[in-house]
Length: 163
Image (cartoon, rainbow, N blue to C red; front, side, top):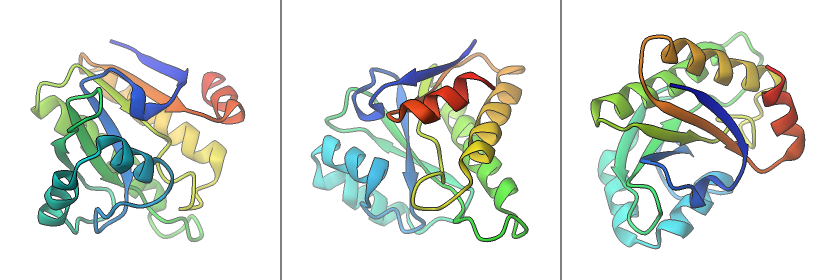
């Protein structure tokens, strides 16, 4: 299917699954992660995550979305950017790939991602955008899924739409 870039709130999207830019412990955090937990309005989500975590960088797990418009939340752990020489690119690609593989396994037809690792994890913005777009496009060459990258920042939106 296709890759769409949207200037939209991920938490409010009506898709089969949204992706949470999670921490290894799968604890409620800040940014996108905090907004997802707040929007789900369920202690059960925290309990699910406690049972599933911790997970390794680049990995992904799935839970119900509880009170969000989507059916599922895929929790993916991106890398904390250090120096670009510590395997960050592979870990970031894996966070996207493992999320997409998990979506396929659960017969998910539409999925929305945030830009993983580009916030407090410090991944250089243009590199993070390119890795996200390239990885998703490569997956879509072989798979039939509607994939969206949803961002709130117009500057990030502009970078993504030019790739």
